[in-house]
Amino acid sequence: MDTQTRIAKVDRLRADFPLLGEWDLAYLDNAATTQKPVQVLEAVKHYYEAENANPLRGVYALSELATERYEEARALTAELLGAARPEEIVFTRNATESLNLLAYSYGSAHLKEGDEVIVSALEHHSNFLPWKAAAERAGAKLIQLPCTPEGELTAEALSKVLSERTKIVAMTQVSNVMGRKNDLRPLIDMAHAAGAVTVVDGAQSVPHMQVNVRELDTDFLVFSGHKMMAPMGIGALYGKYELLDAMPPFLTGGEMIETVHWDRIRYAQVPTRFEAGTVNAGGAVGLGAAIRYIRDEVGFDFIEAQESALVKIVMDGLSQMEGITVIGSQKAEDHKGIVTFMVDDVHPHDVASILSTEKVAIRAGHHCAQPLMDFLGVKSTCRVSFAFYNTEEEAEAFLRALGKVRGLMGYGK
Ligand SMILES: Cc1ncc(COP(=O)(O)O)c(C=O)c1O
Image 1 (spheres, protein in one colour):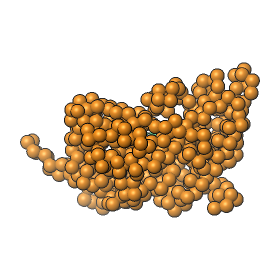
Image 2 (cartoon, protein in one colour):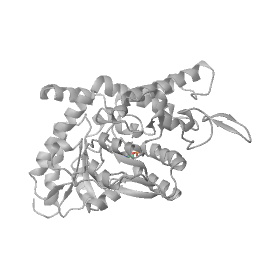
Image 3 (tube, helix red, strand yellow):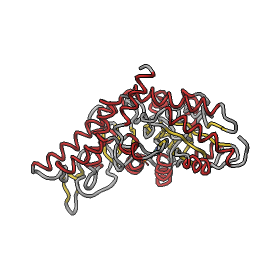
Image 4 (cartoon, helix red, strand yellow):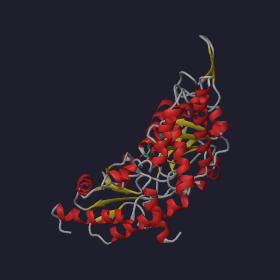
């Protein structure tokens, strides 16, 4: 796609996002959450206006329609990820809940004293704390898989920590700090050869690139809808059917059973077994609409092209500024829409506050990845993160605003 066509497409797509027209702001915190297009907002509104009932329960037409909409969203999610069947998709609130579900359910069924769980140094707290707790409950050991200074997870590093004691290997596909895409297939193959299962955190990859769980051959993968144009409160856990099928429930209550008697219980089939209580059908409809929107109106080729162009502008600009340190790889092509950096002498919160006065929204802090901050030897950093609807003008506005920071704080340019 040539540059002109790409820029024209961004302009056209931006019109789908009402919030972007409401605010005079360069919104560059998309790794935290994205804005929502009218196609998603309308789908959720239509569901509640015309199709809402408690799905999976009623035998009347309206409930059956709600069930149909909910299951349609599951089929769309399965198609997005290339899952073998819709039943391999469990709806959850978000990536965090998916990982807790796994750590409790798979962890309690399979971890025992002396086992080992490998978690990479890159992980968000959501893919660290549930495994730490699961390991502690079982008397298993948590082992860190280090990354390179560029934020890469390598087979060589995994070979040093993997053993026949390893039961689970949890890794992120794209770190929310380093922004680097990890080529996980070789690591997944190694984990399988050692008899371990793999858990991939797709929270920052699924929204930005075509992820195919069968090509990855991962046992589990999680993501959040709200980071990919869908409403908050809906996310998913993908699991290979035979693994999910062998797992005990996480939450118990309504809907997740076949029969309940005082003295005996038969749990429902997968995925219903893992969706206790009334489900977030409106959220699932919104996720389905977001997946359709990305598939039919946007396209992952376009997302990758636009986000790479913006990262290139930012990386080139940062390399020409004094007092800036980019975390991780110094090559633009290694950053999937995310660039994390520090400004000499200026606290990241001051950087983000000054940028806010310049109408640029970026993130400052530890990005819920404190073990990674420790690994990198830093306390907190600034992060700019793009979505396909961001423009080159916004990337330039960010650089202009950042160029003022050190001067404003009394450190020259
Ligand atoms: C890599 C990664 N994993 C997991 C999460 C947790 O996502 P959520 O808060 O939607 O559960 C995030 C959120 O920022 C993330 O960036």
